[in-house]
Length: 159
Image 1 (cartoon, one colour):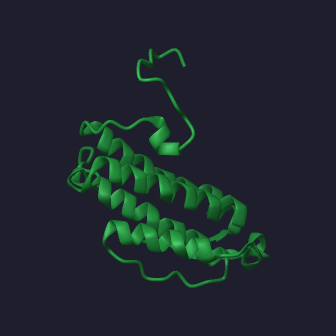
Image 2 (cartoon, one colour):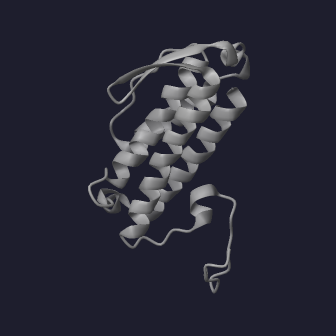
């Protein structure tokens, strides 16, 4: 469970920090339709990292700063302090949590793969999409840190 969560969350928190830096603070108010703002989506994603990893590690979820940059930094540092051994037995845990106004109890596998990771990536993607829709130039490499395309490359729909 450690390897499915902590390194993934730390990587994408780093990518989010880069996106926020590239877009600029004023762009964080961008939103799609009546969705949350980009800042709120990224803040939610940062919160999800600890809402998922902490129960798996047998830890309480700490309070996070409300300001986006410190929130992401604290989440990343908290995750960085977690050790794989803390997750021993995590796969056998039943995680009790709330999804909106719904109380849930899920086996750890479902909690991570059907709830946690999808919600984390939903918020990262919506924050990214909000910025793109507002005209901020971001590419797939900004999102995942792996893809690279030459400046003259154009998506033609054949991928």
